[in-house]
Image 1 (tube, rainbow, N blue to C red):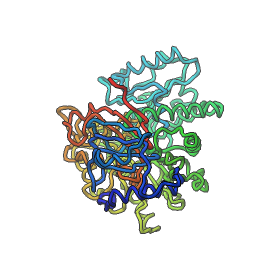
Image 2 (tube, rainbow, N blue to C red; image 1 turned 120 degrees about the vertical axis):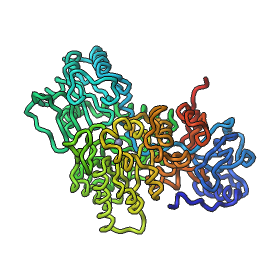
Image 3 (cartoon, protein in one colour; image 1 turned 180 degrees about the vertical axis):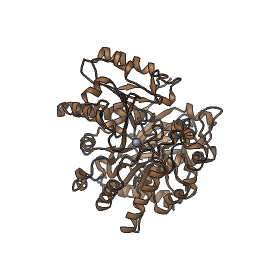
Length: 587
Ligand SMILES: [Zn+2]
């Protein structure tokens, strides 16, 4: 694969001359006296760093110079001298570790911002904690308005709720504290929701309501819905909430999205992320993002997958395609679908039944025909296609869809289609990623978060052979990217990096450590591999003259620090477009 091959290097002087020429051609203030022998001073020069470049032809460096948002030189402190002029900002990194900014490979940008605007249920130790969070919110929320939250996970509670149905809470306690508010609390995975009695009444749900295709209304023995909605059944309440949201004015909606984008940008910059691959936004959201890009309001660079229905996308996609829009802050060139649910909620679509729920092999949440139709729209409009597949059956079906379409529409180049998550694979399907040029878009931190229940769901053999097998995929030649699926998990890349290189849950428990990546492989999965998976490897993912000036400076050396120190690593500085966008406050 070309991204793994060192590039041939031009002599330093030729690079400077080429840059001077390029900037003159771009109209960057070339005085009549300037010549190719003279160069512009850089805007920002980092010196004294321990720079890991992800460029195999020069893996390490001391210094990086940036001009007009791009890297113009990488090398020794000494070699920076010609780039430093009167106006140049010079930052001494004092030996700190710098590397290409993290590229979040799969997460939800607006969702991340929204998660900061609702109840965060991730830290709850019991269902009672959540009931009291809702009780507090009810005191300050006007009657009739929705109380929303996200992040609960029944497997993470110290004890199951009482009463419960299959370990899931019922609406009995929540109803007592929120009789006047509709309540909707989304599971950490996003694949299940909890609604209170008020919300269910608004949605017209009672014991007679049937399960929609690809979803389940969890009911008690008496047949009454308990408030838990799995997979597509979430839409029954979600649509009522969406209708309420839609009644807001256009200005209110825009303000809300702007606030979410602002919060998501700040969160990413604080955590060292300079580019973000958004795993599914509607056509409307893409329109809003375009306006924010016009106004320079996107704090990090976005690469967006469109998630909308086939009928709406048909005929409209060409209009929405954007590559490097708004000074390289917005690219829209991919489509998103989901074919199954998540393992935690028994929604992953498996080839064989769940060990802890032998009556079920999971849920197929969208028909093969419908996903194939989306993929055909991808071919027709030259969009990448990204399908969420978690269970081994789901992954096999998506690989089959891709294989059939590639055979019918051959090209000499890989289309770089992706499978999002690729969490559980049948061993026979592992080599197919490389063979088909399909990218495995994985999330390191899902492995250690889910590891508590994966062997229960799949049994030991299937867990070992096929769960989160990123090492086997890389060894087979496939491209594996990394990310967090935020707001499902915290967007912190260092948590996911730690999980990727250790697969350690606690001091005693490690989840099949033979699948751990080396530190260098893990950095690649978070930089150049993500860039490749977005057709952006010529502008991102390594520190090379000509690429974008997107860099993160960290308190620890991620290649050499002791393993347990990885978790304590702090982001010192995040640089986007050659400018310092975040700097940690001095202690
Ligand atoms: Zn996702």
